[in-house]
Length: 267
Image (tube, rainbow, N blue to C red; front, side, top):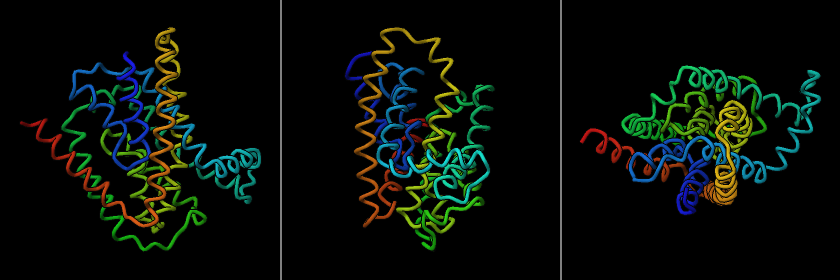
């Protein structure tokens, strides 16, 4: 794979992973709408690893707190903030792990890689994001995250396995529907991505090892580094923008792209 292709894939993954516009949808569309070759599983995993390190760096204090709290969580002591955060992240990851495993074993993910489906999901969940964002009561902060909300947001996250939905978009919409302020909804969504990306990497790790060679390892390393910097920049941009702007610009983007994709699919 050429350096340009790697740069393009890494930029798309890095920028779209944490913005509510569906990274998987964009990565599927890249080879579908251009003459570029499909990036393959190795590059997919590599760019996700890059974005994983980016979000862990950006939210390093929360990540460190949750990591330190894991031993207490395993002993059933979740009264401390770190242990509680680790526990809630684990709970929120269960639905997407179960559904992801089912999709992986049945081949459902391949069946859903269609331009028409991505277009519809872009529009439908763009509208969902707009409605939840505009009608939220803004009564909760990240400190109010509860077991009930972790379960509900875990279900929202599982739905996002459908290409075009957007994992971050679904989680943010779910958090806004539960009454979380914009910045806190985005923060919870980003933290939820960490165990989800790790679980996805473990699930696909065996296939990656089988397909790995020196060239693929080199390409993967380059893509991971590029995705890291793109994701870090996009994450910082969105979190800063949310201090003054709603999610409406992302909704508009989703609607326009969705309509274009439906025109391409059905024309």
